[in-house]
Image 1 (cartoon, rainbow, N blue to C red):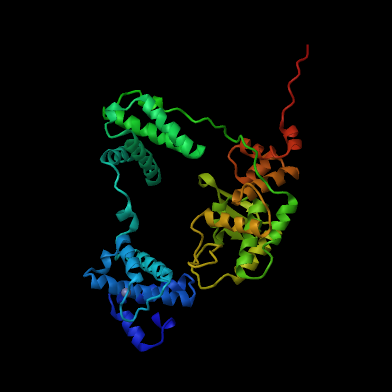
Image 2: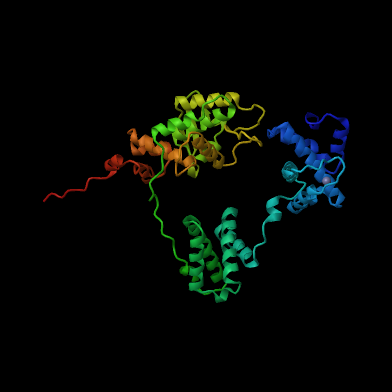
Length: 414
Ligand SMILES: [Zn+2]
């Protein structure tokens, strides 16, 4: 309801009267639901009404709004002479507000979704490749987008005359990319290029051995030492979340889940209220590969969760345990938000570590378990590893443990 933010009848009439008017009450409700501060919400609502005026003056309608119109609105703000809208020097609030309003209109189905209208057009050959790959390999959209990027890059670099491509040009292309980006990025480019070349070969457009010309990038699984924190650093990290405000209580519960149970960031982000069984003191976690595991809930983790849940904003309608502490106050969209909680806590605790995300704490939990004598198979169960090799990887951090794992060389009796 607009009345939560504005009281003057004249202003209310004006905001509801323009082109944005029919959607402005629902937009205000969304801003309130998402936890925006009233002062910010007021600016965003004004911006939404301002955008309506701007679009109307151009002779367009709301469904015409797209990123181009938002762009020209941003330029308009600098020289705006519209009555009722203050020409502020800082237009960031207005620009952010219209973006939120645009997303709101997409959500209501008034404007077509961004992803449909703003994808750069792929070359025809790449589009045909994606269709072929979707039909014959059942590839999903994220894979197709990634493959299309690689194929487009290749096509733009080597030229459209694919009949002229040769092994040398392909290798030069890959070596150049390898010098420009990280090894992981280069590695992920290889299947995209091979698939595209196989497709071209299937259509008879390029020589048949070109896919073989793409070399592999050497890398060994589990070859690096895991990064982990010492017991003293873990204590400091948890202490960096002392305090009684909701944000600190949430961060404390998250860090304890990560360090005691070694959960993945995604597990924490997707944890739901129904996954916690207070009676049995257990936690249901959906692991990788979609199999569910029941983990014991240590006392301190349970206490921290309970304290957070008691003071978590009650008006947010969600099944998720953890929600963002800044607007929009919704569940974390992915594990990235959880990793960012870890990163901030590390900074507060003054811990300098080469790895900064949630996985650092999973490594720490794993190494701690093994150090404290938990057998490999049981540690693997808690960490939900499908193979014991992966659990043994954590033992690398401790040479004493490595000795236990190394099998004695069989002696031959003669
Ligand atoms: Zn204006």
